[in-house]
Length: 421
Ligand SMILES: [Zn+2]
Ligand SMILES: [Zn+2]
Image (cartoon, rainbow, N blue to C red; front, side):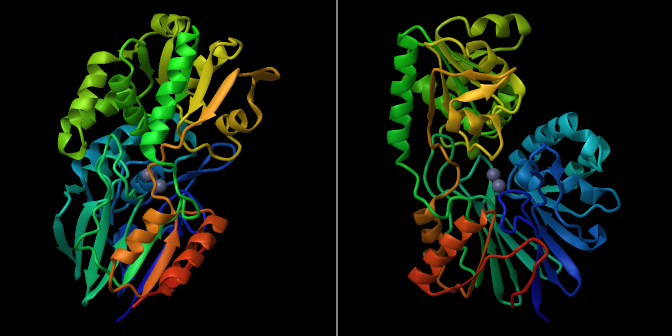
């Protein structure tokens, strides 16, 4: 009997990853994330009957992969598989998500707790068998604890990359695709149309730019996601800027603490320990009110300037001609960060100008060449399903794959059902 893939989310869109593998009416669910509309209202994936889910695999703790998971735990309790660090960071992310968006969400803390209470922790190299499927996990190289998963049944294999990166960063090593050969590949393609600049060159450029601003008496604001990007940037700054005050603000600290509890998922834990020793944590309003008045660098959430302490600091430093905003995260459409980048202004009772704005590509997603190397490393591939992508980017990557390998590709829409084997 054949299997089907149900594209419950992430079809021609970046966000709400949710794919169900169906066999004889039962499901293995790969991620169950949310996305946000232009008004910041959460958009959930399509549903399947939770009682028929035999295993729920969560590749990592970003909300676009785990944000809707508690919804499955209202009427059922499917076993959930993830690394222990993903479980612990997901708890923080989901509680924070409820704090901000609870009005729009069909679940509460009880369902978050039920979900996290159903977790069976797995690790890189772990294998589990359930309902005729064997699952094997390996490092996806995206953020600490992120996994890819290989599903095998009746001798056929499906590899799901989750979000994946093929280069080493300050925080994590590259994805490990050894022993993950498959007939079907479900691959993300957030940046399937471009190659990122060399990471070391980007790092050098950021360090030089920060020095320039601070030596001129200015303050640098670096808005960054509190999960992973902040830690990577802080580790870089702490190592390379000896005499410049480095501060951080937002949910960065509790996430760093979890990372330091699970050192094996961090490439160089000593670099994160140095962050805790060397950098200043802003933990009170009195500190927040004065920290930006002195020359230095501040790393703060939210990464797209939609709120959080980053927005507070932006309003304070905007009119200072010596200050700068350095963006290091993806800037979604219609976000204040994107507007700042494109127009050099943000709106607060009319446009306000920031003297210096720069963008640095610290992506945690593989570019075209990295994604293509994953495809080429799998010797038995028959079919490639491209998800987690803007339609034109996915199209470009599909064309690259066809040209270079001749393998059959699909760029599904949300709601599509794909017969696979
Ligand atoms: Zn992610
Ligand atoms: Zn994602």
